[in-house]
Image (tube, rainbow, N blue to C red):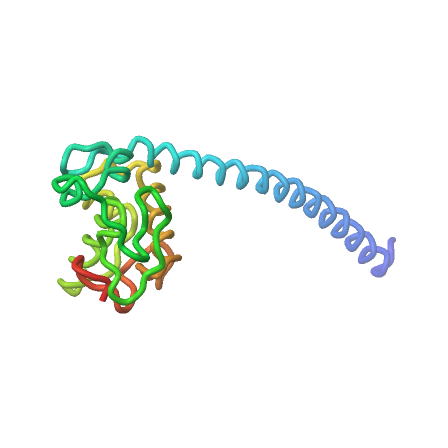
Length: 183
């Protein structure tokens, strides 16, 4: 009859073997997960870029890409372009928010995001997700559109226009108010 110590050693050996097998499996799964995560990130970036290119026309009927590159209506009427110090140029990056900076410095898409969040703040409603924004804009709530909005919202957060107090939920940053100006 085997001894108790011998039986315990056999069980310990079997448990160690099983533990080693599980660790090997976990390592394989972790490596596969890293590959899938990298592919997912690449896919999300591609969807975001395609969503920006295929964004619907704004309210004036102009294509998104054309709307960003056009001059404001007052400049078209006078035939002159004014150079406002510190103003963002068409198709340039989102400027850092500062006291008194008007929303008109932003492209139409960014202004729409700020407007819907300003309306919610005025009505004392909470922050919005990008899916809710897409629905509010009348867009199809599909991953490409949502990711394009998320990219824009994250850029506005990074530049101080929006706040993201909870992951994925956006609201106007402290001090940013109505579309007339930045304060």
